[in-house]
Image 1 (cartoon, rainbow, N blue to C red):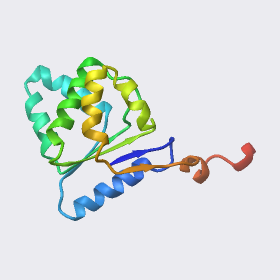
Image 2 (image 1 turned 90 degrees about the vertical axis):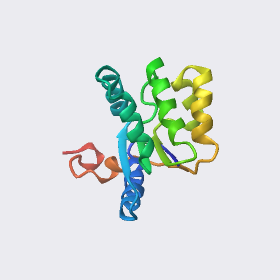
Image 3 (image 1 turned 45 degrees about the vertical axis):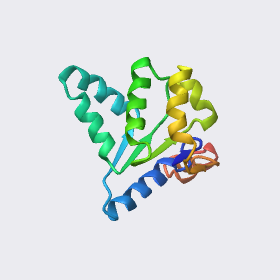
Amino acid sequence: MLITGPTGVGKTYIACALAHQACREGYSTAYLRLSKPFRELTVARGDGRYGKLLAAYAKTDLLVIDDWGLAAFTDEQRRDILEIIEDRHGLRSTLVASQLPVDHWHEVIGNPTLADAILDRLIHDAYRIELKGESMRKTRSDLTPRGGQQ
């Protein structure tokens, strides 16, 4: 599943609600902001846990990856995300949440060959939710007075 939309419209809320329901139904789930697994995998390469960490991502029934595409991927990150997605493809569920519209994902991944491989596995059979609207944080904030007056 792919959930896209501007900041604050509820992408993470929906992703976490779906993950919560999966947990209630007995499925294993993990929520990751994309920067975190990239940091963890870099460290794991050095201390010998790389394969073990990839295996943990692969066996989780629902993997929620949030904040996809906030920064351009490095060569190492492209290879890491391909490993994660490839290990899960057709076997486990992956939910990706992003502010970036799907048609811009290719350029943020970078390398055209790896981007094709990653996106081919993510996009073609995915359910898509494209959210629109203003930030819920902005409209629901009790800290900032309406109209900018204090």
